Image (cartoon, rainbow, N blue to C red; front, side, top):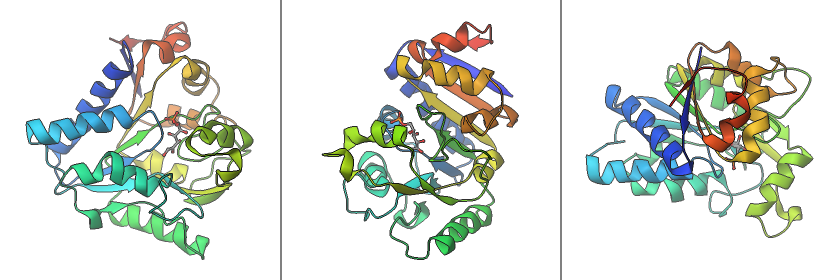
Length: 251
Ligand code: F6R
């Protein structure tokens, strides 16, 4: 089941996403949060840091599992997703470092690393709330469009479109890693709740295709139409095309 929440702008979207994550932590302080990187969740992480500082929201019992990590980037690299998470959230709150998990992009035995990550998540009892951004091509995590849905944590070759989209974070396109390790769609679909955050006119078309188009691995996010508990939070610009389909929107 899908519930769509529309907010005016990026700030409103970020506040709503942070409120939902904070509610999850309040209801279950030792919850497992699946987290995302990218531009979209930065504002929500800022709001969570404010809630930690001003509302005593504690992450002390929380475990986190991130969606993905670039292959070949060490955690100290400013564009690694481990660095991003430390920089935008972890070092500002009381989460215990040992309880934060990001795939190891430096693993030499990638098959073993993928199997370890799936076993870790299932050993935790699965994910309570999975936060997702949405790629311009419909990817979630780094599960890129392909001819079948990939369920296990896997090594992906990033598509040209994703490399182009992420070039903005690197000095040159040639610096963008060509591969990543990503949580598969299985653990995402097994999460008790999936929270998708979208912002900006550039996402309007793919939001519409993902949530009101056919369920197809060519748009990996479309698999979320089969999930029993998805909350989509977007600003007006990102939801513009979906709104026109007549879908029920909570404002
Ligand atoms: C990030 C991730 C990606 C991003 C997506 C959207 O961990 O898994 O799927 O969520 O590429 O990125 P932004 O938010 O930068 O538009």
